[in-house]
Image (cartoon, rainbow, N blue to C red; front, side, top):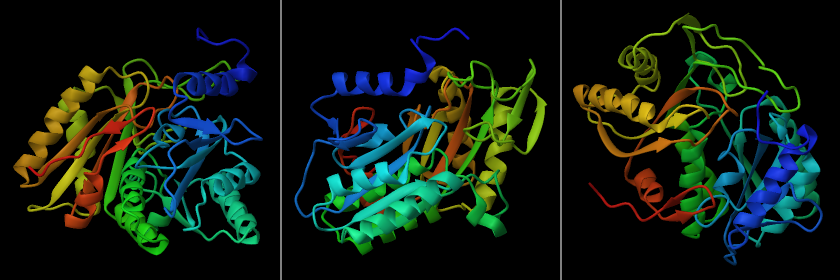
Length: 337
């Protein structure tokens, strides 16, 4: 394993030290724990948005804490959930009296610990509501959608909910819009190589040279097909077919597209993928409002990518278009096209 690190057991904390040193004007941490990252941006009376999850996915999860998105994040070890106590500390720090919305991925450890944190927050008289993102169409069939993994599409949930909270909507409305975003986003991913967890020092699964896996999860969870490597256009078309059919997306729809690199995929290759996605959507009469292309939810040094589609209406578009600023993502107000 050739990596830029010191002691593997210090990997997460030293990463956080670097983030706090680089972005002191944007983020800080609670008095008790540097793994409880919170925004320096405060707006009295605003709904707080909390998230959390394992490290190894930057800019997910902590990278979306800032103005116009999430307000705080509890951070676990690589691919491991943070504790309920850390989640509670974030909750208490970001609560301004309007309640707190938890947004997190559909993974067992996160669900269990966020549920516990909500119970603890109830005892602190903080109203908490929860939204679980699970939009990976490869991880479960449509009739078992509640079993689907949350992957890169959670970016849209942060963006919509963050815009709604910034607009000073009450907690039930912010929750409703977050759930609406979840209901209208779908993702499909693929991997070309495994990733290496620093404390293990070895790959957590194998993909042979000249092979790829369609539907791979961001922790190395199995996909739906392992096959020989194909040209980019063929890979993209094979992913778009089940993706479009799942909601389904249809002629006349307007969508935002997220082409996400998993950590070791050049941005040039992501644009090759988007070129084909735009072509397919155009042929089907689906309009693209705004594309996002880059790294939004990675898996350490895994090579691969995912495609997410968010079906828009006027309400979702309004909050997607709002400006935001975090250490890892910044957007000016989007204009109508």
